Length: 146
Image (cartoon, rainbow, N blue to C red; front, side, top):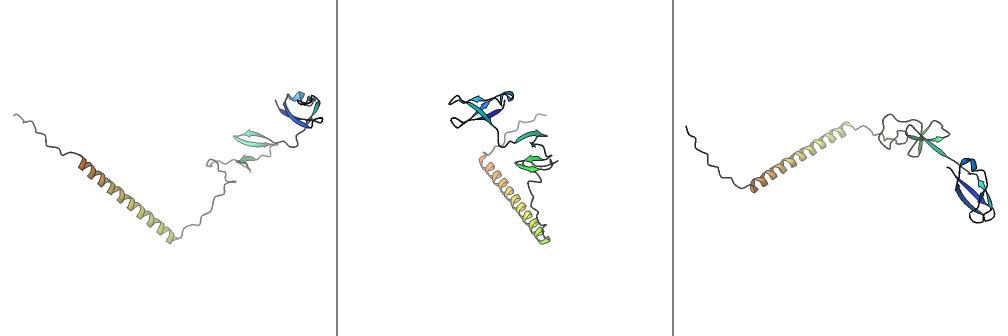
């Protein structure tokens, strides 16, 4: 059932009542002074419906809403919370050949350093394990009988 507003002219009060649509135009008694009150018509009204998982404004202009902004189409492929008409991607200038060479050299150097660090960690771990393990005495082998 819809919610309607009523204005009491005697006590200048405004109150809301939930009523069926067929009873909306009938006067409603004021909760303060029991006088008959007339319904106040809303000054603005907006409504949305859901179509294809997106909210659409009524009357339908054929547009969609994405995060509070109006868009004209639904994207076929997009990340969550992104729309091509709303989220503008920055255009990056292509790297010059020298910048590209420097970038590749830096990446190679970083990978070599990381590989060296991993090798040193493995060696330290191997040394710690060797120190912790007690020396094992060879077990006497049973004699074989021919």
